[in-house]
Length: 272
Image (cartoon, rainbow, N blue to C red; front, side, top):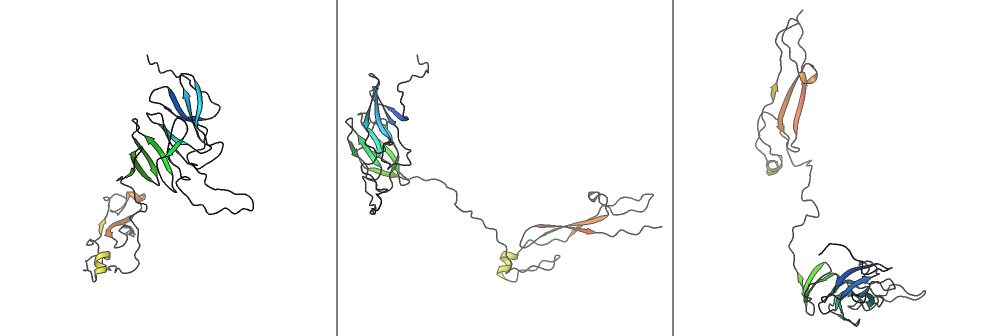
């Protein structure tokens, strides 16, 4: 019965990860120690190593530990391991007073896919130069592998030529395609609000044209006669201040805003 209970197989003082079980179910391949994948060319005692753990004898042993990083290990059905590593150190620092020569990159210094056999020997399967291979993965049957190199995805046979995969996706524009422009010349503003004048030039027709302007509509609110006096114009929206307002529906040629104009109305004299 599968109870879901966890069982400890390996206890190590160093960090371990990327555990993969072999096809026969007798061995676990895992990574031990190591710098992050962002430093694939690191060379030193803290480089990522490939180890094997035997489930029958409960013993661990290194499969490949040569001071170079071994990233993204994948176990093939044959027992071999695919990993991303290098086989030659990239010069980075030199001795005091010694000038470092110009670095000429090659496939041995560039992180590439290698197939590591059970005796620890490795065979390079890719020939990338400059930008290394990342995010290596292999199919369960061990016939196909996929990886990323220089921003492109490659898929191919383990012992064959990989081909680039084309993707089609919808992306957002890097910059907005809209622009707010304030025109200060080239447009003639009509002076009359009651009549519509035909455009006098193409620029006025394109940029200065606006819908026909309607006459201003005046709205007045009154109250009936009262003992205190005759009817007067009033507005409840201005705390009973005697105002007359008009709403101009004229759309400006440039801004497109609506004008809201308040016009004070003189109070008629009260009869005495």
